[in-house]
Image 1 (cartoon, rainbow, N blue to C red):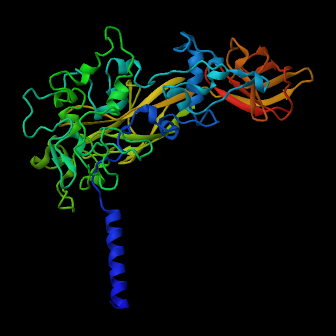
Image 2: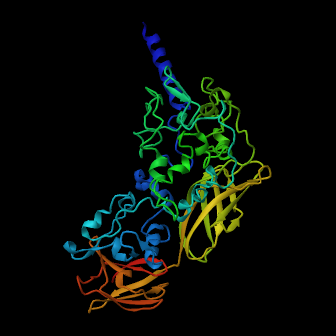
Image 3: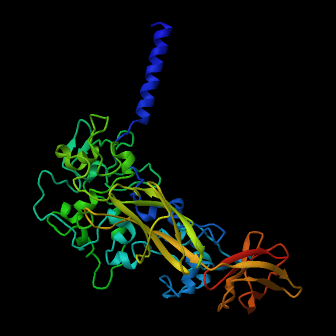
Amino acid sequence: MNAKTKILIAIFTLILLVTLAVADIPPPPVNQNFGMYDTAAINYSEIICRGCHNSTSNPLTGGVPTRHHNLVVNSVTNPATNQPFQCTDCHPSIPSLGNAILLDRNCMNCHNRTAFWGNSVGARVGGFTGPHHNTTQAQVRDCKFCHGASVDNYNDGHYIPSNPPDNMTPSATYKIFNRTSGRVWEGCFACHAENASASPPIFFTQMIPNPVDGKYSSAPVPTGANNVHHLEIIAVNNPPGVYPGDECTWCHPDMYDVIAIRGCESCHSVRSIHNIQYDFANTSTKLGYGHIGSNNSSDSANHSWDCKGCHAYNEGDVSPFAGSIIPDIRSVTPTVFEFNTPTVLTLTGTNFVQTGSTTFVNIDDTTNLIPDTIINGQITVTVNLAEGNHYIKVVKTDSVENLPKPSNIRPMTVISKVTIKSARLQGNGVINIKGSGFGTMPATNEYVTIENAGNVYYSDSIISWTDTHIKVNKTTLPAIQGDIVTVITTNSGEASATIT
């Protein structure tokens, strides 16, 4: 073989590899860019949590400290103590460090259903179980409150076929396993499968397909100890009148056929399933981006994968249902801002614009706003809200269905503005703090902290407190010039300054 031939073969091989790299490789597992990640909350990484719950040291750009401080302000019951939250439940003093305050900012240390590592030094917030799926809405199975129109609410009257499943009806698992190709068809497992090497791991079935080609070495097991539905739903605190174990019948009403598709349709209806697609305008001819891709894929062997996965060789084209494709919000900026102040929010996501549909922004299920600007992946909207916790979503309507299609929700926190103009140290250990927005005097001294060399301490006592002037005492482990003083107000504001 001459040198020229070798070079041509090398170039051809490179082109082939590049072509394969950019090709649309079909699932499983399905990509994770629409809706919630297919895992259990226990496996969420902190960076995923921050996607909804942004937090920085500046209270005007981060909301997690404010939300947690509201637990104290609003006298929320701590499930670990059955008493109203106190600051020291989360921030105990540490005697070995001169009574410094424990500050652990990793969400998962409180919310991964194990325990807060600070229990060894007095924190009392361990053992939280599934904070999301133990909300009031989750307990009454109001799934759409958080997930939007990509799911349905249990027993809300949505259409569920009454006839027995036929050859067009997909299985909750799969009907066909091709031992030659290693793929399954005609059911959820065609796309929704586990990937243990993903971070966090993707959960669905118990058997894990090869992550390189998505093929099974043997037929996947139609049960799932790691199934995301099991890990989340079983962890729900039973509402009044629902006994442990009753939640199993929510998904498995037919105990003679525990994986019957009609049970799935209680929350995943024919209509909602056929309106899910990530960025439909740009992915309708690509593989594995939703449930309504068309037959026009350039990959002739796998064309219409989105239809074939569920319906095998009885697939249709695009969506059999007209109407709005469900919108999805990826981020909102900012998530924390001042009350009674016009604020422009930027929402990024997918499927915001669609011919024949009208899009608006909804706040707290009570206020509908017309976007200031809108393109398919971004909306800007001006809001002016009262103090407190709020949520925002994008809603689409159309004249065909005349049925609102809400996106998932995103939380926001609205606070009063707190400003520290000066913080001066007197010789007797008193710190004079002047500014604005301090509000009313709190009941305890834990609302003023002093940071020295990375350790944070409470003030010893509050001498006086007005909206513009605070005096606190710090003679135990005395404060010094250059320390950082932080004021946390009873109306959830926060500000810091250097002591001079």
